[in-house]
Length: 426
Picture 1 (cartoon, one colour):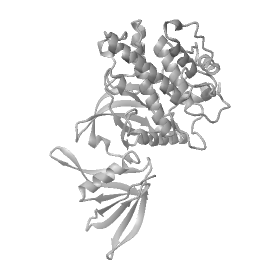
Picture 2 (cartoon, rainbow, N blue to C red):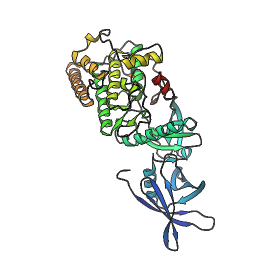
Picture 3 (cartoon, rainbow, N blue to C red):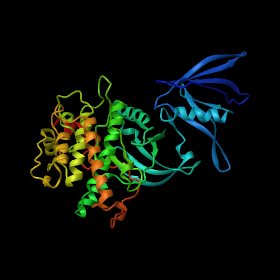
Picture 4 (tube, rainbow, N blue to C red):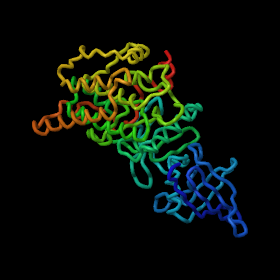
């Protein structure tokens, strides 16, 4: 851990007859415990910080609100309680451990309000923090589904979410809990809808996004992808379901969610080589011979999204998943079939450059962002000078729109994570 923060706290272990003073030192990936013996602190044991490590906070209710006064850990399968009188220090320790190990008393700290969604990767519910009243979201991941590989993927997903949580382009992880059955990922609650809901309703009403809306979306997306590239992260599952508005009807609040398929670029071996959603995946991701790819695969997926925003359909079709994957892999797109003449040459040329099959021919992330920004500024200026009205009504103005606000995670309409091998290796 880079720039790790050290913390030392005085605690004591509760005993039937008397209390044993301890000093704990947090050093990033472990907590060291020293016991006071004959006036000297002697090292006794350490607690490694992993997501499987469980810490239960000892809570006292004051004025109907929970107050942290200590914690319980397991040492050699035996529970050991520690009390700390330094409230601020204990709070700092909790913040340092947040999302790096699992807390266990979820029900004491949160009320479950309602279900947001059900998906293949886990169910999501709306919750409320008892101490602050803030509304959050929690994703339930069933432990029985966690093979050793899936556990490693979960560990990597949480590590990635910890890295990106400081930027408003990405869903913010708040805490990690576990009980006997689930891991529970606490996240910021997003008020808006996913792009998939906008697209579905546009299609039903035979509407399209305005060009200003489209390039507002694309500009925000490429800003997020550039930030990921600076952090040496590839998302690998850019699609409308994973793009959600943090604020209702505000495209400038577009947020990338679900880092289950994301990976670091600076690693020797990917946990998953072939992953993503058919219809949006880059050809090199679907190529069984490819063992390395770059940020360019997110560029291609963004091209699929732009195509969908412009034409209300994906560039690849198929009656079966296998056929869709095949068409996605060979990447033959007939632009003449579409009414591409209604868009400027600069838009169509950008679209073609994003959807190039070969990485060497595909536009770079930075060049794509520059072209998208130019088009965004052009259509923004036109809207300001011509007092234009968006051709696509906003979601909250659509009739009979009954999707629940905050549905930030959805099941892929095509395939789930457990089916990766089937569609890639076929």
